[in-house]
Length: 558
Image (cartoon, helix red, strand yellow):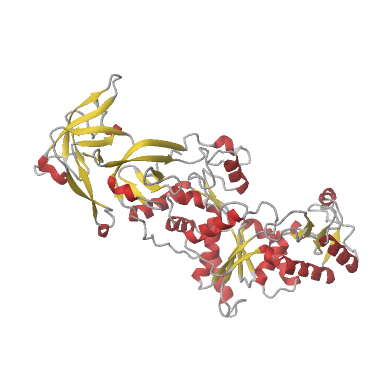
């Protein structure tokens, strides 16, 4: 049974919405226009939960104001980009419930126009070809009390234009020349100290091939791309705040058709994880995880495989809010959002992960019981579960010598079998090594459905499956990939912070036969165990695999 109903996404107003309302309102800079945003991921890896916050802000802001949002692959850098990542990014965004219709672009689509605008800056005397080596560039950059300098700043316009065209024609080696914007060598903002806007790079581009050997820097290309697409609000993370004056300078000094407004917000930080693409790539390439979609990864494909729902992630991003100040969110809060969604919508089933036999010695025959699909949703109905004298129960639901306050099976004690009968434990059978291999009990036929007509108190209720009508399954129990709450700290090697117990694989588990048709992305609550999703990669009708998406309660030990 698929989880087709989504938890309503909570909506909160934030400072970005306030700015947009001001811009779109009477007398605003965008009065009479349609809100137009963009999400510009770099296709050199898979999207993770941090990107998710950004894309929800981009697409969600447009959605809130009845506007539109472009999807633009930031392939300005010719290296490390791959169509695999392009396809995965699109899949993840659609999975979250957003779409871009026909507004799908590549940054490299604008290379010709970007080059033309760079020549325009040279002709206006606002850019020049500089021949400082990388070492000299650092040496001449200056400090807070010393301005930067370049002996090429006053190079004649015609000479810079000629050299720039020759750079494009491949006449110079990498590092020999750059094109720099002519802004302010004394600026307190180092991004404005005549920044490089083009560099020579001999690299094959995944879409442009070998057409170009010079490539624009992101700070130059990005505002141009925004303006050419008619973006009204360029929403980006906080590290670009100091780059905003350069963004505005490019818009003001190039012949572009519109004037976007850049607004910055704080990135998402979550404890017990890392969200650097470089670090995540190392985990994949060196085999610390099974791939980008490993359910322990913070990637959207990993979270999806683990059992996270679009509604849970969107609610998480909305509830943590949009702020200017960086902060770290508890991973447990992300789990709480998932638990809330699955509690409302996930069907209930019974699964025994550490099985031991339970024999009802005074019962003969078979029958069926109707078990509710979801007590939170009465309209979800019930499903039949078969019952016989041969059952499977959890091994820890029996103790021959019970500890204090133990209310499950032990000799002489009664428990309810969920939805079936009350049974009394009469003993157990052990193997030659003293291990319990079978628990014995007798049922009370007057207690069908777990009722107690005589009013006696039965404290324990346990789940079970019919040994004569059940399925084998593999169950994977996931925990945090890192045992350190701050593995991303510069003082640590995050590999040393990995949790050696982040995955436990249980084979030979027993699940009720109603799960025979379970396929991804179905999710279920296994009674008393947690919420589990069908693995979208390894599970099949012949070999069912369930991933624990989240425990019933927050049990992670801080």
